[in-house]
Length: 103
Length: 195
Image 1 (tube, chains in turn cyan, green):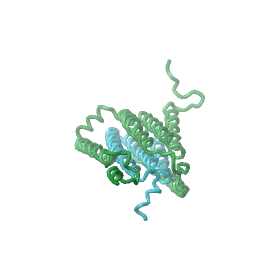
Image 2 (cartoon, one colour):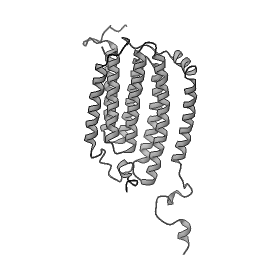
Image 3 (cartoon, chains in turn purple, brown):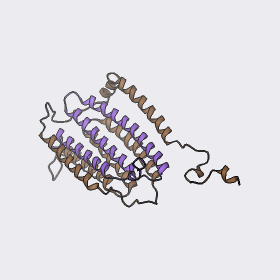
């Protein structure tokens, strides 16, 4: 019943939606980065699901998912380093107080 | 003792039950990440969500991806995020207000996006789809990784090296000589000593 491509894709879409809401609604920069990780996980799930359900593509899907994970690790490293560098200057992790370019 | 063919009392296949449990755990933990007030709990729920997703990868027949998920996401990224949370939390400041004032617009956009994605998935006629997920055996994945995708593999290695160097450069303190004077607007030690 649930072992179909539709079920996995809907699950992936719901996870991506939750990540989208977190990215749009949160004030904390690290919470926004966590939401980005949720969205990356959702896309990864979609890739693996497509690979598993389309004939002959299972291994390719897994390989691409591994690459996405490596790039996500690099993104998390640089993103958190940027957040810590900004925090050291502005003493706050809240993104709506980073307004010096607007004034 | 062999398990019965279907789950007792419900009549589902075992895969369906496990899928439902893991999917509920993953979505619930993700909702707690997004809706919770306490950011440290959000980080821990994020790791729970990653773990449930690893279980879903096993159910999809991709055990190497599940292992990498546990190693990279729970082990590396989760701990990295928890460290960053603990480095940047201050008791002072308006930490009560977790969401933006216009968070309802974000919620509206997310709901519209979810409805659109579900409609697209349900009303698309996927060609040549299998009835059950195919197994991605680790041997085949490894062979593919070091033959067809070997160039991308090397590029990812270079990218990770660049990310490590960039992370160190960005997070490095500019003036590590006298950290006590760093954030205050006081004159430097030399100026204070002079009359």
